[in-house]
Image 1: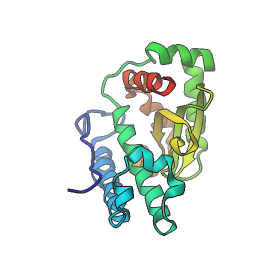
Image 2: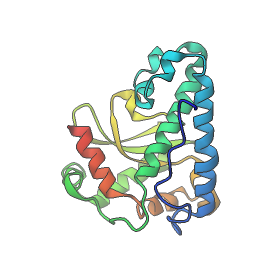
Image 3: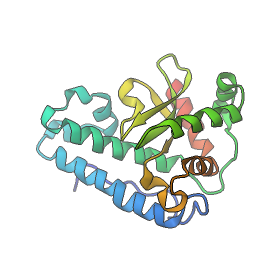
Length: 205
């Protein structure tokens, strides 16, 4: 049995249509995410200490990874972690607005949900090349919007992601081509705000 496994997708491949199409989901999950898992397992195959670490611990302690496999672990552990997180915050027919404690925190920090969406979308669009945009709880337990290149995650900077969008082209190009803003707008229509609220409560606890 491999150390890390592809997690079960919490919805059918076509469940997010028309916002995220079935073919993109099949390729994104079944090929891209699977490849990150496989390459991570390959990278740590000869290091028993790293094999015992949880994915989150690997990313929080990248400075302890041997130089010879550092890039492979950083990229592929990040890819595995980010995608596992991403699938959990998506849902078909979810609430169109934030709920619970995170709703109040968003209003307190950004003034309104619309302001959050604008700032978050701007961060996603401004990320040059491949990467992610995130809503995080920072070291001061405050909400903050950040973006990371490639498969980096805010966890490596001491921040806790509660919402994130994948802006690698493989996440949206089949349907949206170069129209990244349209993809981010569609993403907000399938966010699982119940999960985001739980992420927020865990992050501030």
